[in-house]
Image (cartoon, rainbow, N blue to C red):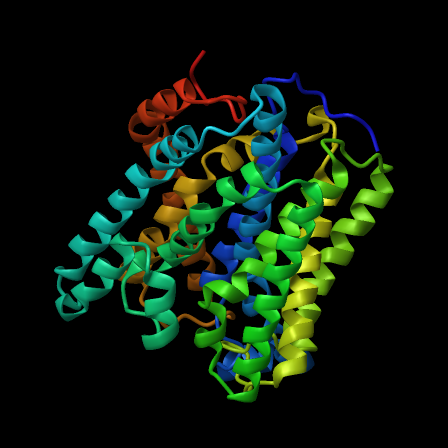
Length: 386
């Protein structure tokens, strides 16, 4: 281990921006990879069709990587604040989170509301927007399944906000020993739900959108922060590459071998123990991915990946709308064997980046500057500002 290159009042690691971009890219693949059930795709993939069917589900765990990274950073920043200032200013924490998340989040909901009243929209699902507005969308979707709107991808923000309800209080009042116990409680709660949902043969969306199930990833991020104690792993480049590849393989096996996610793979609920092992393996993989990147020299990282990581919140918010626009141009059913699929994916990806870059520069930056005034420990710099 080696100490991080950060002052007492500042914590920023560019390599974690690359992790943010990786997490978004996995989610983007989850939403854009075509089904392997198409007869033309089966003929194209032959014996690899079953494995390809699990690939979109495995990419969905990019969202779990977001959760793990978020918990790691929140815990790290709060512990540094507690050490530097002697306490944690809860009010300032919530002001920072509100200024970072709410403006863009509610803009995304507004766009979703507009799409709802376009031709082909579903105005009767307006109650879903209401659940999103009060950060209860994860429970709404777990109970009633998804609704047909590009704002549907924003359900994860509800899980984040639910985590923020207790995160600063826990770090403020618990010492490291009790924080370990708190993480153990989160993991126990997640696995209890997985055991129950497995016994009840719950469908995939009831499991995936359950906030308690996702809290296992938050526990993983906090545990990594506690174990590292502000330091970063000292690993050789080949060790980082091997750990990176191993982590991605574990994410794939969690879906292909253990069927932790079975929404697109076309299988039934695999049972309690497969779910417990599958989601546990995915959470461990997300932690190992962070370890693989932590401590990488920023000079060895592509600047475009760091930039895209900085605007990754916008990428996440807008990608559903970009995919919706690509469907309007090319249609929904496009086979993997068709060149149109790749044109559609390129359009969705390019439009996502353009929307996120414009939003970051002209919509999010003013709020980020206000957020900076409330920072105790400075973190990610604001792109394009001094």
